[in-house]
Amino acid sequence: MTVPYPQHQEQTIYQAETSTSQGIQAIRDHLHHLCKQHLHKLVRVETLDGDVFEGVVVGCNRGIVYLSMPAEGHPRAFGPSYYNQVILPLVLFELLVITLLYI
Image 1 (cartoon, rainbow, N blue to C red):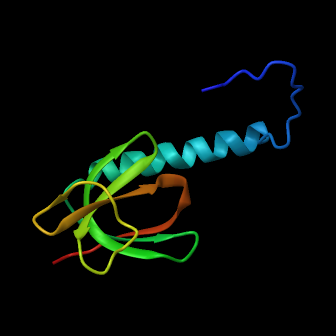
Image 2: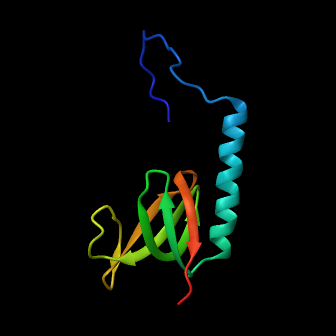
């Protein structure tokens, strides 16, 4: 969404190169497809920042995967909580590793 500011000039401070943008979109689309294939399965996810989460994939939409996790011990999680579970949204292009866990 663009909010107009009258009498202000624009100066682009960052613009991704076309190849970078296309690469990120390809990764996002690939991860989206993988997450859709593994809905309702237990996974371990590691982000580029080194955070690690374990949960069940409950959705994937618009570049975000949603993990259902136990509510306690995860203060970053937000959203609806059902039966001591929270839904944690994670941005697909920030993911480094997704590991399918077998029970």
